[in-house]
Image (cartoon, rainbow, N blue to C red):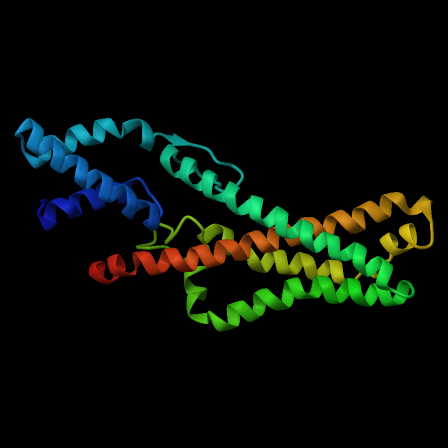
Length: 240
C-alpha cells in the first residue's frame, strides 16, 4: 500500500506526460499496482521501484503524432487508446448514418413532387441540428467540460473524448449550410430520370451523409465524455 505522497508523485509524473484525466487515472492504477509489486518482490524503496516502473513504461510515453485528432504530439499510449475507442465510435456512427441514408430513399419515393422532397430533406437534416442542441440544453452543466480550451490545471483534457465533443458546433454549422439548399437532385435523378444530374445527385446524397456521420460521432463522443467526467469527478474533488 503506497502512501498518499507516493501516489501523488505518480500522479504528478503522469501529469507531466499530459495524459487526459480519464486515461491518467487508468494508467495510475496500473502503475501503483506495479510499483507496489516491485517493492515487495525486490524488497526495495518506493523511489527505486518507481524508477524501475518508469523504465518499463518508457516506450508507452514516447511522443508521436495523431494528426487526425491532435495538432500536437501525444504519448503513444494515448494514441493507441484514443484510436481504438474512436474507431469503435466511428463504426457505430457509420452504421447509424447508413440507416439515415436509407431514409433518404424512402423520402424520394414518398414525396409527391420535388418541393415536397425538399421539405422532407430539410426536416430530416434539420433533426441533426435540433437533436444535438436539445441534448446540450438538457446537459448545460457539461458545457464547460466540452470547450477545447477548458483543461485541468490548464494542461490536461478532462477526457479523451473532449476534443471530439468540442467539434459539435462546427458540425452543426456545416449542416445548417446544407439545409438551406433545396436538395432536389436525388429526387430528380431517381423519380424524374434526369440522369444528367448524376454528379449533383451523388454530392447531395454523400455530403449530408458524411456530416450526419460526424454529428453522430461527436454526440456519441459527448455521452462517452459525460460518463468519463463522472468517473474522474472524485479525483477532481480530492485535488480541489
